[in-house]
Length: 258
Image (cartoon, rainbow, N blue to C red; front, side, top):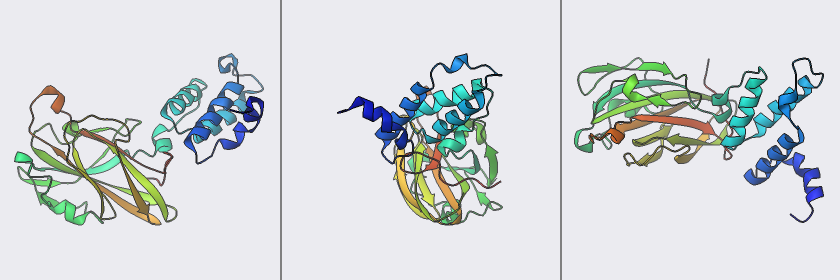
């Protein structure tokens, strides 16, 4: 603010800054310095260097508008982009249910999968709301990791489902689990309860609930319990969520095993 010329000179040093505002300003300045990218042709000698710079900026960006714009630009130039991996969205889960949530009693009922949150037994069979239920592994094509449980388990009111997913961390480290859902939800990491949000149909915003956690080196298990109540309005039909594992700035932490 005091010296614009000096600010422009040093902004490039903040691409990986832990301060979100400085990082955003650095990414914006670097994008502006690239000029009109649309003029770059396939045989342009500067194309390789431009792609390298765009990938660097994509890796550094954390704000959704910058991330999505850079992803679009890279794709227009013929490059593949993994948005889910950048954000840390978990796209493969194992699901089991439905269990009973009539009169909202399921939120506090400890069904058998919940007792196994530290290491789910994905080969188990449980007594569900209508009979035996087993785990089902599902991968979503959505780049932001959104799952529609009405499609995964069938549309029904007054029900509970569990979802479990492994996350591999190369080291012990601090992380955040961020989840968005219009349904009541509980979250565990390695069997430790991280959050319980007994709220229905309040909205569905990115990073709606943020919970700090400690990942151990190796495999970590995340489990969620997601409850659908018995409201019948059209806007109460949604039974959905998306969850990501990231650092404090929203950069992906860990990965799903192959």
